[in-house]
Image (cartoon, rainbow, N blue to C red; front, side, top):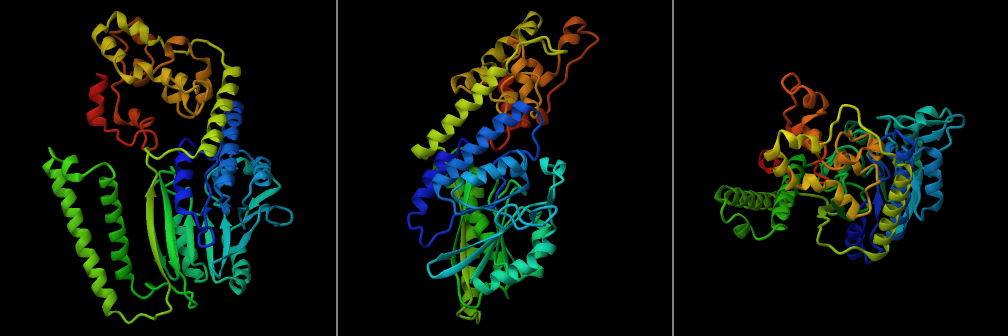
Amino acid sequence: MGGLPKKAFKLEKIYQDTSHNILVDAGALLFAKNSLSSGLEIEQAKITAAAIVEAYSKIGYEAVGVARQDLAGGISFLREQAARSTFPWISANLVERSTHKPIFQPSLILEKNGITIGITGLTGLVGQSPIDEDSETEILPWQQVLPQLLASLGKKCDIIILLSNLPHSENQLLSKQFDTVHVIIQSGITTNNLNPTLINNTLICQTEKQGKHLGQMEIQWRPSKKWKYEGNPVLLQKQNELDRLNWQLKRIRSKGTPEILYKNRPKALLSYHNLENKASMLKQEISREQSTETMLEDQSTYQNIFIPIKKEYPDLENIAQIVEQAKIDVNAIGKQRRARKALAGYKGTQSCQDCHVEQYDNWQATPHAKAYETLVAKSQQFNVDCLPCHVTGIDIDKGHLALSLQEDLLKVGCENCHGPGQDHAATPEQSNLLTPSATVCLKCHTDEHDDDFNYKRDRQLVH
């Protein structure tokens, strides 16, 4: 949620003319997981989710799909959020079990620049969520709901967009069956950006789910309702490859001038120039093939780009206020629940000093020693989503337990990487500690939280 104010700033710059633009999200935005374990975790997650809904309403989203992940707080909670949203939540297959009546709006029709746009949504069947315990709620197969809905929308709309939480393989199958679905926007499937893939007459698209990029597609829609590259998969493949190369080049340039950036890394600079040359050659090939093709003038075209949300972007003030208030409320609830007690098997970092003086002194100079203090500085030391990566001995999905930790475990200490040390402290010759692997580090040093982490390089900093 922390990147929302910067995302809002960028969107405000892009979508100044709303008569030509449509802003939608395929869902999977309220919760990080399909299910929530403890009562405290649920309370804090709901505060964050409600803040996201408020922010999306102020940003001006026009439709959001209901993904399986958005149901982690329960159907009743999502109904409450839908009631306070300025945009509709879309799902054609999340229904009341007894009547098969959609719980949320199954479709939406918009008029933009003289074009009638139909939007529908599908909630995925994969994973677990509270609706499994709700006998009144059901997710129907898309094969059961789409034929009639698409037939109706097809009569009224020039173009149909599907906000899909289905697996990629299901979206491919759907595209082959229905050529009246012109764009599928996937949500919550993988962590990567996905260049548009044309199957039958459907473009399947996806923006990475961490919110580090926006996906922007400019469409020139023609009366034929057919995509220009429908009959030329080779050309489309080359265009997708060019988009991928351009994205890589843009990401490198965003960090600085390559010649300066790689001044002391000749191999990296050579790789960069090779990417440039390959992109240039592909662009020439595409241009030649396009000029020789006999394509119909009324075929539709698109341009797709991924826009990075940069750290240096300013925050949009009204969205930043929403995010900040949510953080305050989340922290306040956690603070009410704290209770100190010993964690079984753990001795605490201070006890390591007696035998490992040099290692202890080195550790004190690392960010790990002050990991909890960074949360205190941001008033987030009681946020169960943040705590596991800033304390010792708590699994990622058990953040609520961190509120009960003894004082000496409120840091990323020795036992966080080497395992519980109580037995080792008592009988060091008989009880060996773990040697940390990359897997241990990557539990917290994910792309979302540390996009510059390198295990081989960074492990030297904590020795």
